[in-house]
Length: 387
Ligand SMILES: [Zn+2]
Ligand SMILES: [Zn+2]
Image 1 (tube, rainbow, N blue to C red):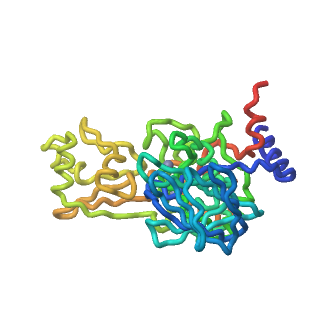
Image 2: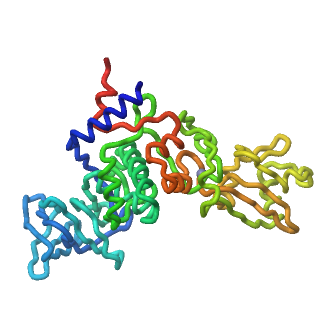
Image 3: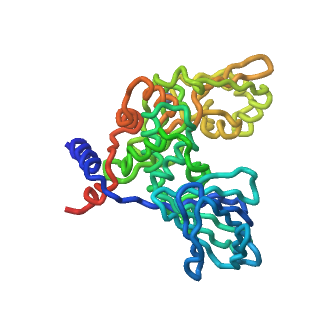
């Protein structure tokens, strides 16, 4: 019944497209310590505002240089010095606006959509750059940054929904610093305006759709590269138990790039590690210490009363996943593993395979996230209202 309501809401919202146009503030070049950059409109036109009001209108024929000097920002064009200011706003004035930016820290020119806010980070003596951007434009940029341009179009749609859900759930992550999310993997990788038209279409085609749990809260939409055949429960990796992040048997990813891996570790390094973590020396002769099989995902590598979480061994030995067997091989042990990543939530390579096989993005999301609902943002307030 609930699902029927949700589906009808998505259909309703699709026909009566609500111009919610959510805007987000993304801290770009986060921690790059930018002290000067060049701004050049790529598409559309911009008005430049300072704390004194509107300064100038610029278009594709213009180029401005901004420098951090004595806790102020200087603005110059090729033939004019506009003076010094405390803050600057580049506001797009056409239907579609994007700009090129080249900073003092990188030779690479990057392109971003919508607006740019320039603040002074007076304590550190560098700029704080904030891309004030329509959320679907941001989501498309994140999808291309996170997964590249090779997956099938249906996959882009589900990744767009995941990235949108993540962004809105974490919208206050950098509130103390004056923006919503940073552009690093700490939040979501966001490198620039996407080049792929298909990714753009995936973001706009799923506009406003987010994933919620049975209490209509945005879910923690975790994902990783490859589960190795079986996804992990959330509490195996993090403390929090979330009902929708359960173990799923996944055969779709078994023959993909990151399905299996191997790492050779010197026997003495392995046994010293076990001793340092409480394994009695005598127990190392016990074959389980150097020969161990995980038939299904297990939480602990254990021998007698000593337990080491597989997730800890993964971190300490820089392994691709926490799902591996230990096989003795002369003066070495071979760690023979499955999958790549923490294993909780959506398996990207499995999901890509499903998309190629013809499954819809809705089927794929329901496969990896148990009993969740795809809902339109505009409906969220309706569902959350008390009756
Ligand atoms: Zn962040
Ligand atoms: Zn998988």
